[in-house]
Amino acid sequence: MANVYTELKTPTTGAYKQPTGLFINNEFVEGVEKKTFEVINPATEEVICSVHEATEADVDIAVKAARDAFEGPWRQVTPQQRGNLLLKLADLIEKNLELLASVESLDNGKSITMARGDVGAVAGCIRYYGGWADKIEGKTIDIAPDMFHYTRLEPIGVCGQIIPWNFPLLMLGWKIGPALATGNTIVLKTAEQTPLSGLVFAQFVKEAGFPPGVLNIISGFGKTAGAAISSHMDIDKVAFTGSTVVGRTIMKAAAASNLKKVTLELGGKSPNIVFNDADIEQTISWVNFGIYFNHGQCCCAGSRIYVQSGIYDKFVAAFKKRAEQNKVGDPFHPETFQGPQVSQLQYDRIMGYIESGKQEGATVETGGARHGDKGYFIQPTIFTNVRPEMKIMQEEIFGPVCAIAKFDTEEEVLQMAHDTIYGLASAVHTKDLNTAIRVANSLRAGTVWVNCYNLLSHQLPFGGYAQSGIGRELGEEALANYTQHKSVAIRLGGPLFG
Image 1 (tube, rainbow, N blue to C red):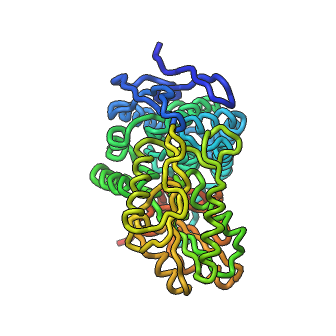
Image 2 (image 1 turned 45 degrees about the vertical axis):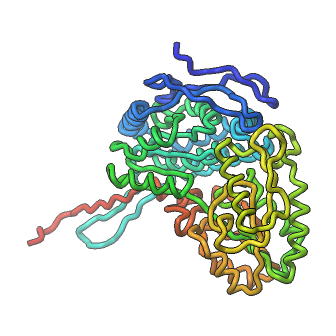
């Protein structure tokens, strides 16, 4: 029998059976080459277990399974039945919330409290798209008396989906919800740093009753399995969440292969703007949440904080005090807010940016060093006295590091906010409704929060301007990523043309 499970335990759930194989055709299987790779606990730097690695040959097998399902049993499932399957899957997610959240914390390092929130949001997202499944509608269009014209919204086909390590389950939910609701089949690759929660999730796909091959979940590396998905000639669409650099590579591969459709949710360097009249106490809480949520490993993190000159000194002092109160440590401790960075590579990358900020002359108000002596923990870090051209102001750090700059006028801060290649998110803090709306409408970003930050909902579309991506996830808009229009023109009779 294939060795595709291992016994593990978490501090909150105790022992459980962890799938380690590739989930293809509703079964866990070994990879063709029987390769495995280690999964590291970022809080302890110890090996959790090893999982099977998907190679190009395994991607071929998964794609064939998805194609067979798309052309076969999945095509016979009615939209209402698709919706019911998604609703049942959402119920199973909620039923197993503690297990999924615990594996997420073990694997990713995020606090158990935040992981529970993520899993609850996954269930909500899946349930939301379950409600959409039987509401994918076309139109009838009256053009001529002897013709009948209508349009259909049809599934694209086999979809490749590549998700990141910062929100493993949440990004899985964002991807599969609209794709399954619209009748597509999927080959999804988890991030190599965080494959465990996706494999646990896969068990519930079969339990919910989805036909074999509809949703295949594989573990593997971007340069092999991810590249194979991006360039596969029998994948009709690819969706990716991750860095802008990798997004460009995926887009090139999609174009060079079969010109598959592409949606990309990429990087950000989001401005968080604080005006003189903002409620300081409330704003400090939201700015803190905006950058340090999920250890700063958030594409929409408010990493560039612009504070109007009238309250700048007061804000910096209060924000420094608040950041130093964040509990950094064991992800399974109930009071932990910030766990470790996901890997040694990410830890080194973030510490490199901190060193760059110091060398370029920025002032470290707090943090700027390792937290503890074990695990990939970094102190919440605040820079001041920054200049626009500094690396810490221009490049996405993807860690618990932010920079504060001063501004005087609205026109000035808009110019500063737009001094970036990105356009994913932004925020405005003010008590003046006119200022809030005027600035929100002026910001070139896919999301603008007013007097809050990082409040996402599966009903609201999410995506970026500029080099922050193509397309939108969540909301009704995400359905367009996974459907294509067909026009049907029926001649009803009468004389022929010519």
